[in-house]
Image 1 (cartoon, helix red, strand yellow):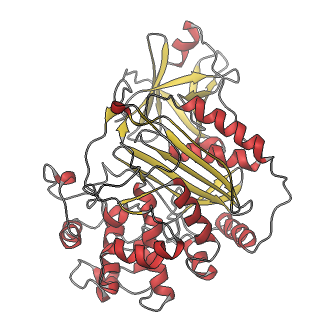
Image 2 (cartoon, rainbow, N blue to C red):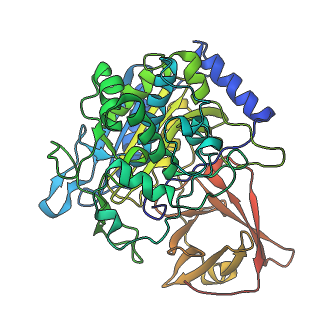
Image 3 (tube, rainbow, N blue to C red):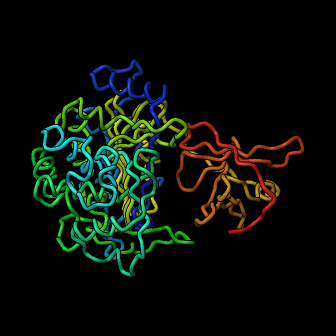
Length: 480
């Protein structure tokens, strides 16, 4: 399942940095604002439209983008094709699979049930699913923050698994067969299986299918009529077709089929940009759960001393940073679709990105739009041509870790980067010497030269903000 539902999240132990992050969120949610002056709405909309046009084309898979301040939408547009073979254009208000953004809704439902005293986040799983292996050692909170040790590696996967329709009991049995990834509470590893288990808990507590419980308790009171279970057989007005450009030549292909029952409570929902905006606004404004409960959703877990994870994750929410400011939300990626929803509490900025191409980088686009709305936009790479000598100097392999290399090569004059086990991706160089991915990426490589001008390492700056990771050049030379 992990190979088909692709969203990676990590959490880390509470530290001074996380404490500062949480304090910043608490201040923002209390109604205080920072002194930074926001750019005019019209300027943000103009720049966002330019980004949309630069990163899409009318006859290919496309994007729908939304930016809001408070309860006011300041930009909302779509560009691309909703159905390429029939020539149907994308327009705002259409319905997309949102994959792992579903986890926000699943987590909020569990937290809502806790708020109503129908369960406790610190209950062990055996109270609800006594036959699940190791249930007495797994707490509901650990399922929510990916520290329960539920593996996403299926045992004896069967051909056609993703096309089959499963009920919750059958899917739960499949998850239960897996070997534990680790002892609960000792590590963190993103787990779709853990959220499938949470769906079964919702059904046990409410006596209803997990998605019906969420619809009745969370969606209907907010009027979110275009959000819910994306049943493949049901006719959903405005539902767009999904595609992939994750191919060796980056050509467009129809997405592989995956039945909505497979990702289940980990990723089965569909939604619209407007619904996701209103959902995030309601969730962060205390209209879904109380502010104290939302604070728990926005808090990373405490892991054992010496155990650290790369990205903080709360209860169904990533805890990001953009331009030094806390940003919460989630990404989603499933066959044919990529998505992101994000909220910057200090500026009350909400961003929604929906794509009908599973190779789209929705997270990068969300970060770019959020920074734009904050008045601190990221640079847009302006490519320059490199000489043959400059291209040759970059070719080689650079070590990321013991198992992974980043290999730079040149084909037909185009500089390419290929990570171990992945397709080659084109790179563009800027006047500052940075190497950006094509078409749009905030992360970049900065080649480092020795005194003789030889490239000895790549410094990789993830997300355009993070401290550089140094990847030394190695003598292994391979081509994609």
